[in-house]
Image 1 (cartoon, rainbow, N blue to C red):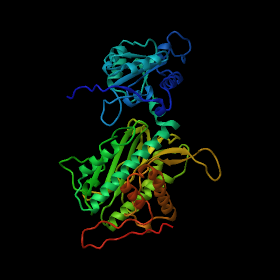
Image 2 (cartoon, rainbow, N blue to C red; image 1 turned 90 degrees about the vertical axis):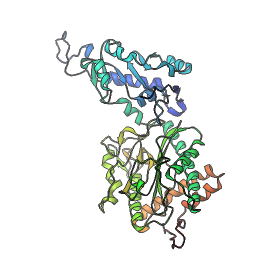
Image 3 (cartoon, rainbow, N blue to C red; image 1 turned 120 degrees about the horizontal axis):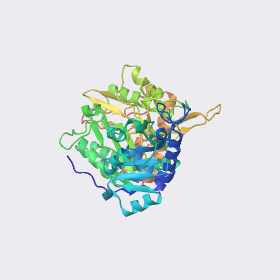
Image 4 (spheres, rainbow, N blue to C red; image 1 turned 90 degrees about the horizontal axis):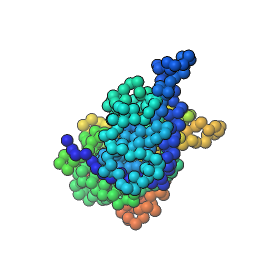
Length: 484
């Protein structure tokens, strides 16, 4: 059993969070007040059968979700890999707030910060005695369905009420400050990926062997150079050939394949920045793609474009839009067995709820979500494209404020080499041209000092794709796409 982590807890500055912690705590208290008493218990001293006793009225909640504890208090830690959280419980009542945490992790700065908000510090293990003995006084405690079972045992059923995860709902609705942070984080992350793509492309053109693991390590090096970079959001998924057909494959130094010029190469990489969490996937080909590979890639791109450009009425769920990402694939009996996208945290979990393209939670302005259709030919190769977007209100021809769409954060080109242009509609060609143009305009000032990256960026975002790198003696194919 590994030792307990003792990383320091630190304050997540409000210039990134966008909302003070005491305001979040007051919102939780307002939610507690709005909850109804449990219907199965009635006051024994009242003549009214509908009047609940004080012991049956919700007066507090305990937050066991580590991301929700961190988000509520605007604190971050390092107890888990890839996610900046710390082990703790947060108890919020109408009159008090108590953080149960290992005090070794709490600096004097954090202690003063919590004291100013009237948040009481107690040792992590005290939470069980506190709950068992009813340390908050009268009233019931609201707990969400995913609360650890031991918490419900300590409370006992007459003293808790199951309720929706209110913090999940609040956390998912990003502030304008957080949205701006995402944009800046994705710009820096995109620049790192472009510098790395240029490095990798040069290696492949020269015929130098590069393994999946070596490419992954080099990408991490480029990201570490970025301002406000804290770490990866998950292990890089760097996959060539048959490994590309495994959606969550992770290479190691010993099992990694050399990147193959005959099959697509999938890179899925995330980053944790103080101002946002990134999650991006692109598929490239360093040789001469086959018709089958091009057709699959183009179908995935069509699904990606369909989700990105859809306008939908308020109240629409992610599951209702999911078919758009799959339509082109389904037409020919093709599919992928993962979600078309998930919520993303703000310097928190790279997978965040409650919304996504696989559930029935209505999408709301401020929800950040990924757009990631793919296709995997088992044992041979795979393709996937993933960008992050935020739900926004959009104007429509006949007006109305209840129409929503997506604004994209990701700033990484989409390779045109594997596209079959005859499969794209005029609108899809226009979308792709504008996408790559906008990426070039956004990233050029950021990578201008890196001549190799700048050259690669200009080449990959123009209308004519590069001449493929193919084995000596084999006729190559230069793809020219008439986008207009």
